Image 1: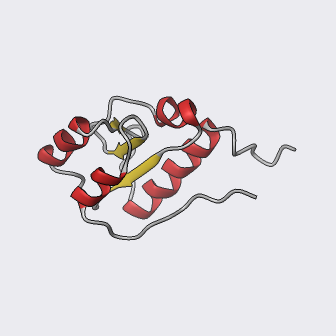
Image 2 (image 1 turned 60 degrees about the vertical axis):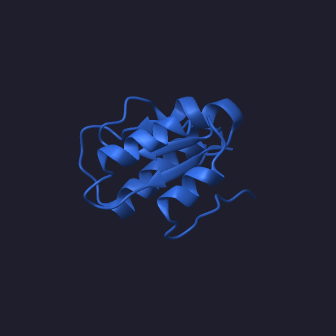
Amino acid sequence: MWLPRLRGLVPFGDALAEIPSGEGCLIDPRGDAAISAVAGRSGRAALLVGPQAGFSEAEVGRAREAGLAVCGLGPATLRTETAAIAAVALALAAAGRLSGGMA
């Protein structure tokens, strides 16, 4: 069985430094990339879900500079906890690790 690794609060700069370029998504309503495009490449992706108010413009810029895709979850505004669950589900599906109950 495979389980995603979850981490709690991590300073933003530390999180960016730990994620290899091309293997991360910053979840933000301004996102222009799909989680599936990142998670489907290598079967792994780091997902950064931020505060309820969203990431600042500076943080979005730093994430892009570090090689992270900025990914949206559609037009709905989600609470932080819900956004994390939705993002993980999309990444698992893109990596082929979520079959919807199908064997």
